[in-house]
Amino acid sequence: MQMIWKNARLLFGRKPSKRVFASRTGAALTAVALAASLAGCGGGSGTDASSVMSRLKKEGVVKVGFANEAPYSYTEGGELTGIEMEFLKAFFKENDIKVEGVQVDFAGLIPGLQAKRYDMVGAGMYILPERCKLADFGPPDYQVGTAFAVAKGNPLNIHSYADLAANESAVYATSSGVAEIQYAELAGVPKSRIQTFPSYADAAAALAAGRVNVMAQQQIGLRSTLKALGSDKVEYVELSEQPKDKTGATAVGYGGSLFPKDAGDLREAYTKWLAKARGDGTYKKIMNKFGFTDANMPPTDLTATDLCAGKIPNS
Image 1 (cartoon, helix red, strand yellow):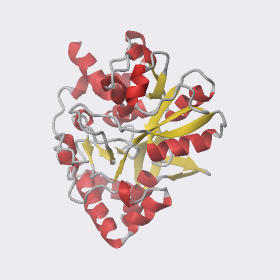
Image 2 (tube, helix red, strand yellow):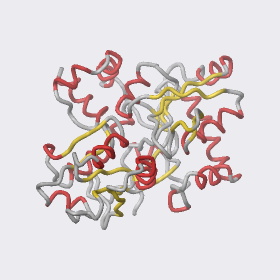
Image 3 (cartoon, rainbow, N blue to C red):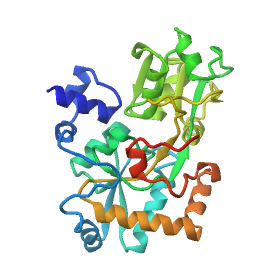
Image 4 (tube, rainbow, N blue to C red):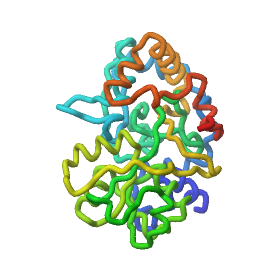
């Protein structure tokens, strides 16, 4: 039981209450229980690694888990789009494979992958060592910082996690299972002042309704969230100082697509395609379409294996 609680923290970003834990689906619980037996990071592969790509080509369809978060992977006009989804659509198109999306709350993406509800995950998911223990990441395909949203006029004058920790009346919100939970905890924000929601959109709605005082998200994603919210009661805030990670270094989010441990050939094929796309301009074209610039492009020599091992480039 202690091992199950430990791995629940890896999946959801924090230790859930017994009530919440008990309410998770059977698939999620199964995934947590199995997590202790999984090993490796971005470079791992399983015993059936040679069969996944050929199976998908034969079936002609790949199922991709996503959290409906712009600008990473979301639906618009009934179509799947977003930076991660467009990368995957371009890759699979070259292999005559159609992409079908399976929408899941962010915190349920990894449990759903472990339960084989879909073949892989394409979402705004950071490559973190604790996640690498549960599945294999493809190469980092974007890098981004964090931003806040606050009530119009920023009445609590919050511009950093230090400001947030110091203001004992400030209630902080973000999505479940995300890195922004850890950023707040490391800054000294007590758990009693941290609220999590099924999605960033839900957290933004709570902010607009006055139920929380601050919400956090990736910079580009937050702009998209607030645009979709369409409320004149909130505003975007660039941080005066970016959050710190466990090592005390400035936290930069490096995102990538996620593959099961037994899909090594699929991950390797996608890795080769992404390198080619960076060379022929396809990568940059997709990045720019969703508001990402050269500053959001990770170093070409940075790998998922590096990030899984906690080797973060100097920032």
